[in-house]
Image (cartoon, rainbow, N blue to C red; front, top):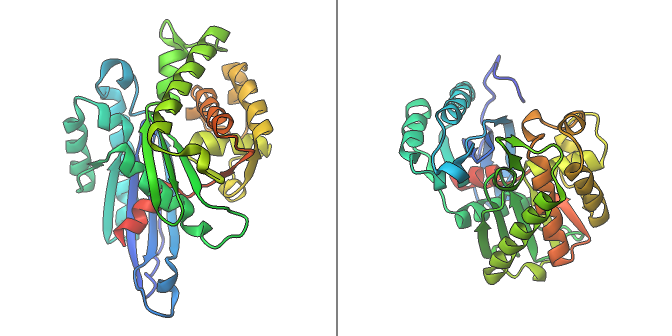
Length: 336
């Protein structure tokens, strides 16, 4: 369901709780309204840990605009975010979610004026945003991405779940539960603003020197991640968030963004390398012409793809399993 107009509120199945999860990151804000199983009896749907999605949507708000440089959330970025919150509040009200949890990640975690952000969210949604740590973010992402993989013979554990956001990337290794997690500041927006901007505009296309500097920055961050997370012990790499799903849509040559075809698709290392090279050397117009490309990702997708490629090369992964289920699903399950 994607419309904000609901003719009739769906009934909540027995043994389920209706919840709303909001994930506000550096580049986008996303909403999931779902019925989540809450019973743990020996029989019935509630015993399966099932999540029944009612509405899932995403809005590019670029909350982290210039935050890496200024340390503050820009007024125009805050207003874009609050406008999206007002839309989401209407969806939550119409669907009748019983519990709401709003999680704010990298950009708001770093900003000196995050109190202004908190007040605005409380006024609109009636809940205080939880500005979580990168490690907490990683745990939510791991739960959301791996819960439905349990028992599959083609998914060898341990998993490495990689959530490439706008401001940071979360790494988490685990089997049924998290073993180690780390967040490092190499998100697609942060890398673009740090390395691919000249005279106030994104270089089109980037120079080789810019690409080399960004790659070196990513490699240093991977060194930091490896200090606490055994990245190379993973047997299945699971990639989350818009940079990874967009690379999957390009790999499949999709005529439009199709979450069903993207979810649990697999992309080979060679294909990721080919797409990344093209993105890094293409113009804004060429990237914007990709039919599955969200307009808000055109300027930052090359950096996100390079983060993914660098991770795969670092750990020797021959492929990445792409998941549409991520931190939102983890937040939803936490509410049950």
